[in-house]
Image 1 (tube, rainbow, N blue to C red):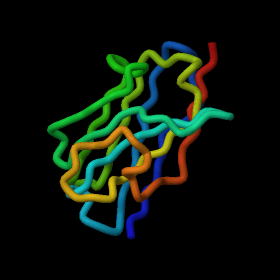
Image 2: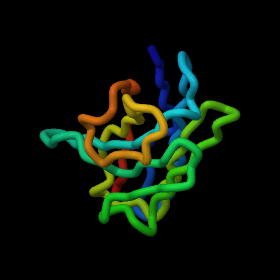
Image 3: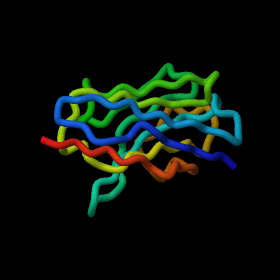
Length: 126
């Protein structure tokens, strides 16, 4: 079993920045690709970014490319999402997730992730 705990959400004005953190415990963190997803009210959970097991490969949703950066520190069992140039449409609950298979590259499908955090709210005002 693995536990994921997100932090770093909050309220910012458009153009501002936030850094989300997700600390993992319960299994060998470095063996698993990690992802960030967002869910706005009334919408499905959507892919934001993913990172491979050792951080060599990253992928992003088109809507966040050039603004968000995913990274990980395996020594700290932590994955980060640096969010810059935030827009009101980025407002959502953000979840981190761990893939179910080892040594993955980071899927964009939420169905490939077995473990989820409780989410952290990000609100961007115009």
